[in-house]
Length: 70
Length: 349
Image 1 (tube, rainbow over the protein chains, first blue to last red):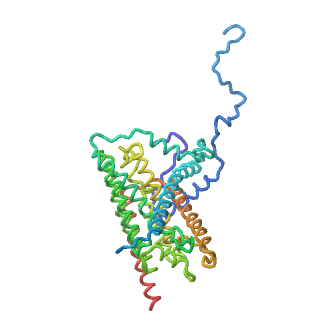
Image 2: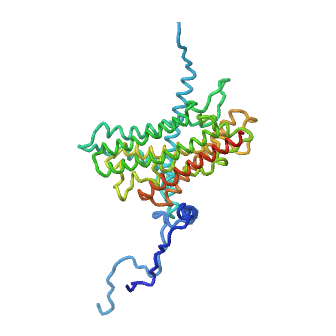
């Protein structure tokens, strides 16, 4: 079957290794979560802290007409 | 003539101690819910609750108040008394375990020695097991009385899970009893504190890992929260519960977490022992207070570990859970026990 995107990956169906059967990769996952624990947060505390607007931001939907009224 | 003299000061002292321990564990459980939400948020790059009070510190109080003001619904077809009994058992079983945990060494007030343990009974370990085993009745009764298929399934799962994981846990406990020769938790701590003895984690690393996994399962925490699998069982055994009855169930989980952390610390990490410090040289009151702080620091670490694991790994499938319990942990625990017994025999010969 032809794939729709170029991101398709073959699923790894090899049998689990000893470390995987002992659930050792959990420790790796715990390393990832603890590294996120100390990362900078993506949150903007909205009413106090506002995101900067991009220079082309218009905000309001307004129908602009040219000088001939089109 | 008095046949039985009552030591009133002893009774007052114990009552004060019980009040302090119960209130203390309630406060810790209250703030564990806050910590859980904060830890979850931080691990997901969010900030977590930060609106109620400074850093959101009043959030658990707001949650509690909300629980009280919710409508308390008892389903028409539910068995009313058992429906009420479920959360009651869950909560009281969770609180009862704290009675045998040594929270610190003794303090001296006016020449009177007050032990910072509610009851130093000589079957402490068995008591913990008995009461933890009772905790599952809360889940079972609640799930059955709700008259809901999902709740019943969850209750069945919870019961079989707790029973399966109690076995390897018990065998680890037997190994520790062989090491110390006593069932009292206080004796265990004192043995680990005495010079020439290291903490039990050094002698029983495998036993500790098995015990920790079983503690996760006993507390119904992720990855073993099969009893409240939201996506398969619509919340599980507490689906029909609302208001403070639900609050009791959720609260009991956090108290269980606190108590099992305390038991793990007592059994494997020397309880209120401060590493590399000889407490007997200090003033007993200072030593006791430092000991309580040391115990609480270790307990907080383990509560954090519970949350860390919860927000890292997904739930086990039911057959994986049973495989892990019966085919992996139980044989490992048995081998661990036999090897320890052989080594103890060999050293004593």
